[in-house]
Length: 218
Image (cartoon, rainbow, N blue to C red; front, side):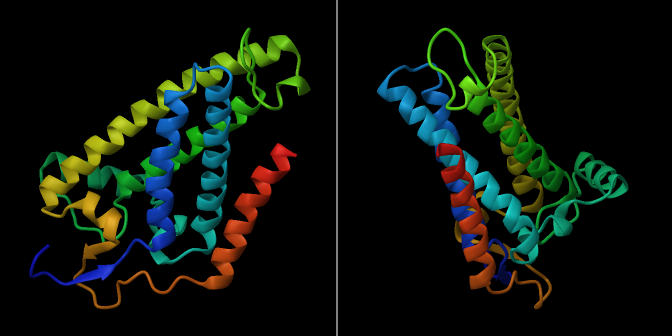
C-alpha cells in the first residue's frame, strides 16, 4: 500500500474484537477435552467468546461505517458477481468487506452463537456446561454432540476465511491481515474513512456484552 492513499476503515473496537476472538476460540478449542481447572479455563474462554459475539452483534448496528451489517451484507447478485470476478482474477476493490467476506462474517457469527448456546447446556459423562442442569441428561448429551460438531464447522469456516483473505490479498495487492491490525486500507475516496467511534454507542455495546455474561453466570 506504499504510496497509495489510505484511510482508517477498521475501528479499534473491531480490531480488538477480531484478534481477541481468535485468541479465545483457540483457547476454548485447546481446552475442550480438559477436566478440572483446565475445563474451568474452557468455560472462561467460552464466556469471553459470548461477550465478544454479543458485542459484535450490537456493534454491527451502532458501530462505525464499515462495522455495520448494512455495509457488508449484500444481496446474492453482488455476491455472485464478486465470486465471478475472483475466478477471473480481477476482483473489484472494496474499502470495507467484499460481498463474499461479508457473508463469511455472518456465517462465523451464526456458528459462534450456536456454539455458545449449545455449550451452555452441553453435558456428557465428564464435565458439563453451566446450564446443563436445566435440561434432561439426554438433551444435554445431544447438545454436547452438537457442540462438538459445530466446533468442526467453525474451524472449517475459519480455514475458508483465511484462504479467502490470502487470495484477496494476493489479487488486490493489499495486505488484509495488516489492515485488520492497524485499521488502514487503500481508498480512492477521501470520504471513505470509517469515522469516529461514538462513546455512547461503544459504552452501550460493552454494557450489553458484560450484562449477557454476568446474567448467564449468575
